[in-house]
Amino acid sequence: MFIARFKSRYAYHRLTLLKAGKSKEWCAPLRLFLVTDTAKATKLMKNWLRAFMDDEEHIDLSTGRAIITSS
Image 1 (cartoon, helix red, strand yellow):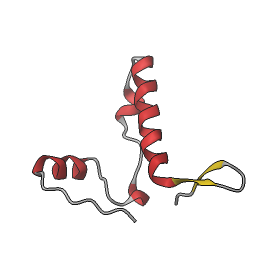
Image 2 (cartoon, rainbow, N blue to C red; image 1 turned 180 degrees about the vertical axis):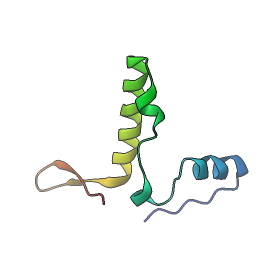
Image 3 (tube, helix red, strand yellow; image 1 turned 60 degrees about the vertical axis):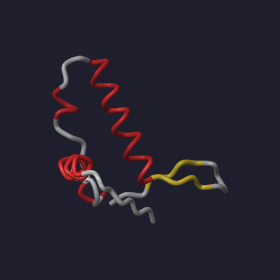
Image 4 (cartoon, rainbow, N blue to C red; image 1 turned 90 degrees about the vertical axis):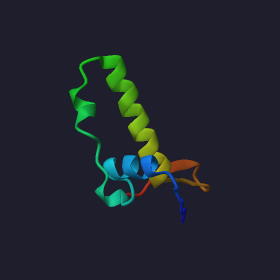
């Protein structure tokens, strides 16, 4: 378990706006799918997936595979 303490009002409001906290409520923001610039959309999607996987994945040492467990 990881616990972070923020003393920044900006960081708190930004994380609240992004609905950070409960990963069961996470979803890809609609704006990812509305971007018309293909290169920018690809970069946004890669970054969102990387952030999601950083939170939800673990490495199975016996097989060397990355496993994502999510509800």
